[in-house]
Image 1 (cartoon, helix red, strand yellow):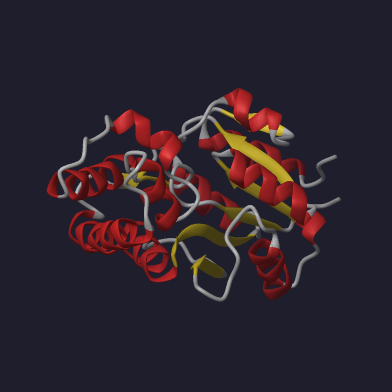
Image 2: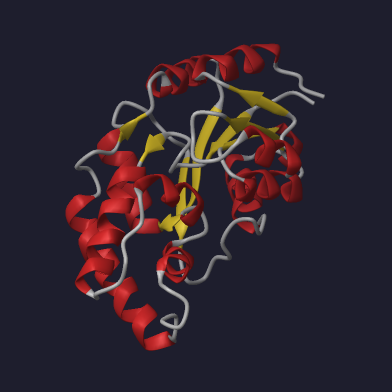
Amino acid sequence: MMIRAVICDLDGTLLDTLEDLADSVNAVLAEQGFPVHPTEAYRYFVGDGAAVLIGRVLPEGHRDGIIQNVCLRRFREEYALRWKNKTLPYDGIVPMLATMQKLGMKLAVLSNKPHDATELCVRELLPGIRFDAVVGQTDGRPKKPDPAGALAIAQQLGVLPQEVLYLGDTSTDMKTAVAAGMYPVGVLWGFRTADELKAHGAKTLIARPDEVVTLLKRRELA
């Protein structure tokens, strides 16, 4: 099937957001008197939305609704202050996206980050790229790995699911692509391992952004 569109995850795929996320959460944990976590640990805490992130970082026995809601609210406040202190596109991402556009690909972002934050990150940190759709998490939309968001984007772009290459860095992304009937490509510069990506359906793994351009130039992927 010919590939006509690319849906990209955001955190860990297009943008290296790990340190700003870790710094924001750790600030909240310290404020509440809880142990903080090393930045590398956040590779496995993030990826499934802010509420899940907070649930994962809190100590056992302190994950009741009141504490979690307070920490979630404070995290959003801290992240609003820190979100671009250290966050940047990964090396090669901007040329990759620009080349995709030159190839005539329709481009979209699908993230479990809240929708307003997703739009802000894309607008401020990838300003030269025209995306046909930018979709983050809202109360009315199920999170990845539910395929609803990916399928809605495909419909919006006017392409079939099997005409979409889905680019992501976690098992959540690969599960989303598989459930949506899209072509799953796992990136190795992000937050998770090759083994995780392969185990959850990645058909291709890439170590550099330019490798996905080589894939797209083939146009038809099995």
